[in-house]
Length: 300
Image 1 (cartoon, helix red, strand yellow):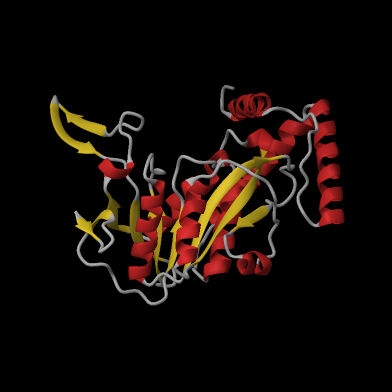
Image 2 (cartoon, rainbow, N blue to C red):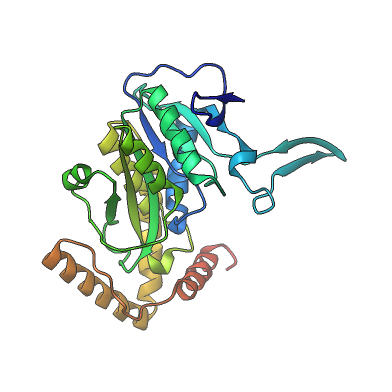
């Protein structure tokens, strides 16, 4: 294990790389991530950038392994290894050859302030100039409208600059906003971009939200990220959802009302509406979507 002068516990694989004005993208699983949209975006970044692990955080410091057990790899009775699921910082390269960093893995179970200071200290050593988190939450929005995006940041200037929806509320925090504050304190721009997922499809994959997150991150960082696969998948899903709703007059009526409410609020206030409209629940429409998809397979 290598420790920084402040005693932050982490292991560095070799030497920390030298990269010109890099960005750090953050997505740690365990907090709100409707449809797994942000996780899918991070998985794409890791795979498409040929990411390599450069920093691993000490599992005994940050993880509760009775709540999140490691995996034993058993081969013909032989315990070959133990796989520890811990937060990592990876380095990847986008399609244009630009290197960037990613903070991935599970959200720490403990020592959040220490973890946030650790991330900030490493980011400073790496020369990170901007950090962007990704998230997704269920929202009373129709699937027939473009995915809404919101932003959070401890820096008012960043929020003022971004042309995204802004909210005012008190909610339980995940580790990402804690990291934002630690980075902001040492002068590194930090923000999180959130995708709004129609609440009635939040229990299944929603590639439209993943595509929207990747596009927003690309625009904000200048990285070349190709989210076309998710856009194509979103087109297919949109057709299936449209067909599903059209087959149920009650759902069609509720969708029209939701669209009207959504459009009116957006037109009047410029922000996304919050509605208590009685639209189908996640479980109800998810079950129908699954049945619809099964019906499309040969043999039913």
